[in-house]
Image 1 (cartoon, rainbow, N blue to C red):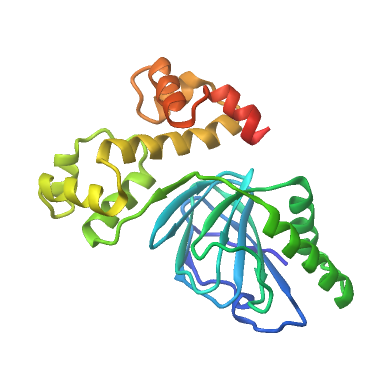
Image 2 (cartoon, helix red, strand yellow):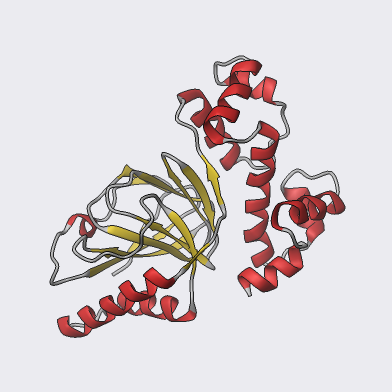
Amino acid sequence: MPNHIANATTQPPSHVAFVLDPERPVLSHGRHFEAEASIEPHHHPRGQLLWAAQGVLRVTTETSVWIVPSSHAVWIPGGVVHHVVTETAAYTRNLYIDPAYPVRTEARGTMVRLTPLMREVILRLTQEETPDDALLRKHLGLVAIGEIGRLMAAPLDLPAGRDTRLRRLIGHLVSQPAERRSLAELAELYGASLRTMERLFRAETGMTFRQWRSRLRLLGAIELLGQGQSSTTIAHSLGYATASAFVAAFREQYGVPPQTFLKRELG
């Protein structure tokens, strides 16, 4: 049953994520969050399919950052430390899979594109009036497990570094995607020289700062596209000088212009 979170504060994870019971292969939990609320960094033995039926989530693990629109979800294997922040007011729906049931082969978190069937199963398992029939819930849970294993991975993550200074800078950029200051200015804010921060980006993310920031902005653009915003509006909100500059950057990253991507991935 969903919990209603009135204030944008840090919340603990759901207790059902820690319940081990193969007779209940899938447990569920839902919450309403205000914007900029968070769930404290944590891990649990059950694997988790994390989805916002409404709103946008930012999910961070030790290796990746995802900005998750409602068309997608994140699969988090059991034991993987993760931190969830709501970019907007959000209506989250979560399925927790008992470790007795193998689901996906990835050892790390993965963003996946939801299917209509997966959406309906999640909604049924997390609805206000949960079915009392334990056998029905078990059958629905087994359907969910099979469907999660078939969901197509979406390579829409950002690599996250381990160095504390780099992680703090990355956290700032993710929360402020239109940030225009140079790396030299930002590095000073987080206690590193320009050369050190350049080295950290290359060594720990495999990208230059410019490449990383461009990819961050383009990930944010995907959710704005799904909301029906124009290229001009998106370009302005994400710090691009012009709409054409945004479209060119989007095409370079994803191989197609924004509207084609919208129809293919979010339609």
